[in-house]
Length: 252
Image (cartoon, rainbow, N blue to C red):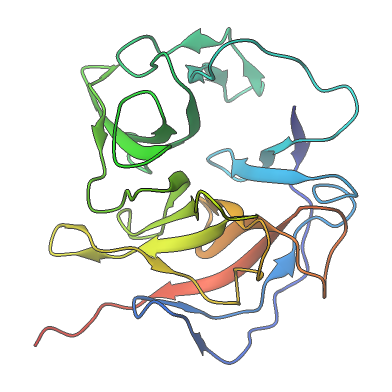
């Protein structure tokens, strides 16, 4: 089930001392803050937040709210036109067999320039269970998807998000025997994504479900994600946001 709601007003985030992560390319500049307590993040499980381009509306998923819809078959990706003047959506259109497969397609993200579609699928082969793929848009049509070879591993790789540079990738990885999931970062190095690195405790709650990374078009220095942080929680799985900055390694 997905839910929409105007973006709640947040108090200013108090900046904390810069804390180094496991990754040398990404540093957090603020502690994780519960987002939309009681509205976006109530007592239910909330995942995969996204924002419209001007930041005035927010859409997210919930796995256990009353009244959710059913489904059948594999998950597919759809698109719907939106009238920015009225905020109304047109009819949902299946992206077709060039993108969708007989398996599941999850968590679509379009790059800021609208030229790249990032998503996860288990229906196109790959290194693991679900892998991350990208499709380029040419002449108004999405082209044959290609796997992110340097990012995908033998486990579940899904829920990707581009950071403010348009290339650095934060995504979710879950081992086959893991009770939960963690967020990883794949830095952008020499024209491609480098080996992924697990993010630190500023984002990943130990032995928990940490997933659904997302960014806000009007807040290039913040990362949104879903987790359960015992020190600051409203439900089983909440949405948080944390400040970050990308650091480029010095060339030797």
